[in-house]
Image 1 (spheres, helix red, strand yellow):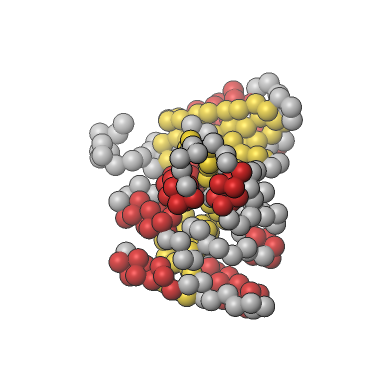
Image 2: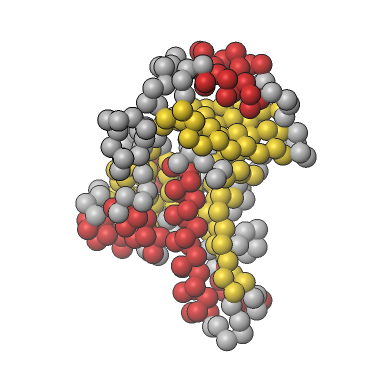
Length: 293
């Protein structure tokens, strides 16, 4: 650590995310490239998917002392990337993502994310909250975040989404989080933010997709209920899963108990999924994700 660096301040880092066909020499080539530019590697993790013959990797290094300008990185790294047929992207920790929160009437996930952000747990900016009901306004005002009410009336969803997308563009939003936003977003909306919309579903997917999953779980007498955070795709509740958790229930639990326990799970899996995305720890391939340690 540099003598002038504040020990309580997280270092400025760069993060390289890679996937490519699996073959020998990938780790050595990446490490050699970074070493030649005096990179101090802080974290490195990798995964091989044998069924797909695919290699995935995440490398994070301290930018202090790194001799290559990050604007020059794509051009200089191209030879390595081309050699191994890599898909890759470069992120940096000192450029927090701008996140829009969407909500409806169930506010537990919204309030949880706002508190975690306020306490410094979520390293991002939240320029706005978008809602189709007014219930969340008081929490937006409490945390001093602009609140935009855009009702979604029957037959008028395209007009509502047009207003939403205009707001997102105006505020340079990087990521949309559906914090129990009880509307299905259109394929056009998804296409504007591919792999950049995170939803929480109140079920352990792929079980009980769609509406009222706790009610259907209660009717079936299940012994475990769960919640799932996932990226949104055109297929309802079928996007790549980021995080899941479960809790055991019994015949003694009524529907109200399931709803209460489920709300706790929803907050946990959504905040984890968001945090890992913000920290650039998630790689999506096919219909799956790798979440690096």
